[in-house]
Length: 329
Image (cartoon, rainbow, N blue to C red; front, top):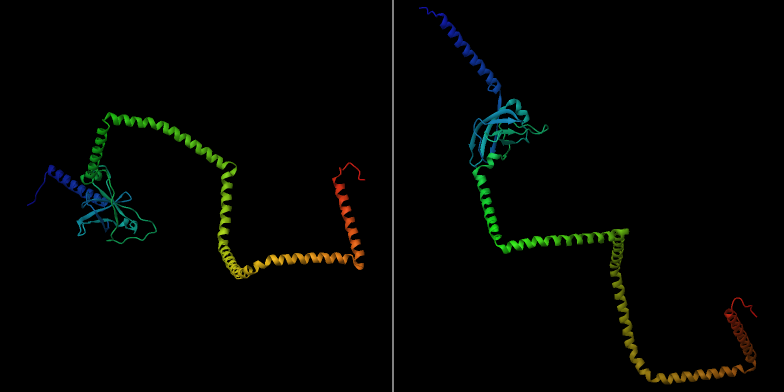
């Protein structure tokens, strides 16, 4: 039995076929743009928290869509294991120094993963490798009650402390004391200013004509001399020890001689008298020899020569005493 379609049914069928073909074509174009048929490679990373991460979360590389998250699992060590895939054309950009960071494109919205491109000379990572993660903090994370709670509690404590301070200043005496402190600050600052100027003047005196430099150089010279003396101290100590030893020997010898001198002491006056008598006798003998025939002439000549020398010496002294203008006689 042959089925016949009228004109309107044929138009409707053509329209349905055209719509179906357009839908297939649109789906194919979208699939190509989304990369549904492109080759992909998978990688793994871990986070401490999985807030905002779920299967289907976008993965970007240098801001370009690169893949999506496949699974989010909790491990035995309480780490969040995130498995994701990226297009194979981006695999060469993933290197050993690459990291995975979380970011939120807008203030409110879903998070996404971004792979930081590694250095160009770094080795690439094969598929299935673990890429280190680096968590970032955004506004929504700060608004989380688990993080915001401690800050609010601390802020409450600060407010309580400020309340105590405010209540303390409600007392008029304390307020007047605070005002008096502020009144004393100005004279204190003036005094500090004067002290600073005095210090500047003193430093100027020290640096004028390089006085400070000269003082430091002299101090360095004194220090060097002291160092030299300190180096010579061992030699001086040796000399002192030798001197002490010699002094001890002299004292020892004197201690041996002193008893003999003590025994001879009573005879010293007699010996002195005898020596004087011997000298007198020698003078007498010499006078007697002068009166002898052989020595009388020579002694007389010697005396005359001695008298001439004395007179000449006296004349020279008198000439020196006369003024320069007076002629010498």
